[in-house]
Structures are given as C-alpha cells and as structure tokens.
Length: 138
Image (cartoon, rainbow, N blue to C red; front, side, top):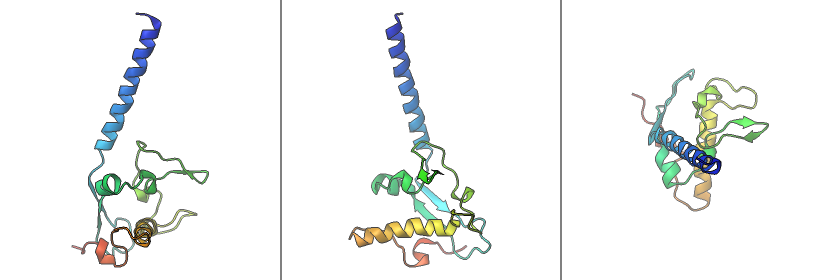
C-alpha cells in the first residue's frame, strides 16, 4: 500500500472512532435526572425532577450553561468531557472559597435562567415557589 493511502485511511478511521465515542457518550445521558437532596444537614424539600433532554435538545441550553470545570477563571469543560456530580465541588453544607454551596449553585443557575427568559417574554419554567420544582417529600 502506498504511504498516502495508508495515511488517509488512518485519518478516516480515527475520525470514525472519535465520532463513535461522541455518540456513545451522548447516549449515556438519561432523558430525565432526579436531583436528590443528599448531603444536606436538613432535608427540607423533596427532590427535583430535571428533564435533561428537553433543556438540551428542545430548549437549546448550551451544555456549558450547567457543566463546568474552571481553570484560571475560565470554563474549560467541553461536550464529551466527563461529567462529575455537582456535589463533588459544590459542598451541600459549606461554601469553600469561591465555590458556592450546592443549593445556591442550583438555585442561582436554574432560577436566574428562568427569570431571564421571563424578562425576554419567552416561555419558562417555575422559579418563585419551592413546590413548583421540588416534589413533596415521601
């Protein structure tokens, strides 16, 4: 086989490999997540059901609006990178340096997005009453 053909074949096969990995990673994401209240000193509210598929596919929310890894003040996380549990960095009990507590991180991200949509006159999810998002505790 000539060298150019072998190089081209290697590039094409590598591309298919990366594409396959991307598809498999995307397929691992559940349509709906349940955000539990694990680790809090007091579990005052029930869990929140979050429809990941609607937010990412239907509402076109960018992955980096929620997923992040900060280095030098910049979010370097990109689609396909591993996703850690939020509580890995956001402790539910205490603020650690510039990293806010878990509840504050969730509320700030979700509520601020919904408020901004409302200001723009766009349809949005709830953000005023706890029980509009949190299910009743069982």
